[in-house]
Image (tube, rainbow, N blue to C red):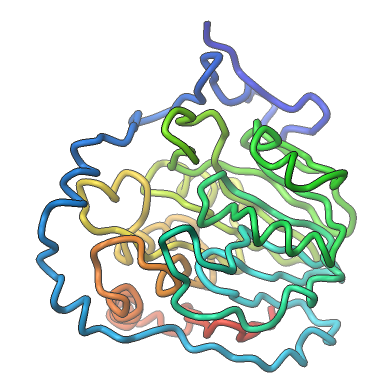
Amino acid sequence: MMEHLLNDDLECMLPDWKGNPFDGTEFQYLENPFKPQWKHIANYMLTRNPQGREKRQDKWRPKVQTDTSFLDSPKDFIVWLGHASFLIQVNGKRLLTDPAFYNLALIQRRVGIPFGVEQFANLDYLLISHDHRDHCDKKSIKQVLKHANPSILTCLKMSNTIKNWVGQTPIQEAAWYQIYKTEGVEVIYLPARHWSRRGLTDFNRVLWGSFLIRANDKTIYFGGDSSVGNHFEEIGKLFPDIDVCMLGIGAYKPAEMMQAVHTSPQQAYEAFLQLGAKQMIPMHYGTYDLSWEPASEPYRMIHELFEQANKTESLLALDIGEPFFI
């Protein structure tokens, strides 16, 4: 039986939003239903990558800056920590997104983190967009919580995954369009087009989404994991003042497997335009090897797209550990 789930303890920004549809086992899609196909996974594993040689020869990696002096600054900043992990400071509050700092089972992290997890001692909020291991890494979360005591802001049903990892750390779970209870900063959970699963039998038992962060007259959008969909244009209309958006540009090949869940550089650029953001920070590339494209391809392509559109000032392709002061 279909029901619509909300967290009754949280405010919803859309009065007519009933909640995310849930059939008792799985969260359902509002548009273009998706389920990973074993044949696509088999093809990915068994088919020759047409860019295999180019990928093997591509030794490009994101640069890493290790100067941590910005951590003492009272200014608002965004720092990329690799993949989809960002440390954000706004109005004196510190937020960390989707921590994944170490190797993930058989997938090695290509570059290190710019500073130790002890630097998260003053963390106020830990944001987890969905349950995939490259966005919700058990070791990273547990290491952060050894040094910090944040509140966790996440999606419906995430407690089923992380409650045994985090002890007494408070968790707020939201449906799309719900506003978390926070101090000094406003955080809203918003749509994305993706999926969730950590094992073989738990498809979409946890919700997925993105985050909108507002404080000090600044608006930041963190896209989490997402493919193309109507949500980017909708979010741009709901929040016509986005200063910075963080969007994924990697893990898009082979298209038959990846296009339903991630954006390519071209699609991320189009999402940036639909959001109406002033600037874009690319993410979800270079840190882990998750797909067929060579490591440097997303980085090169996103620069070419912004250059062709004469929008180079709008692209913030940060080094890992490089602060951008908002």
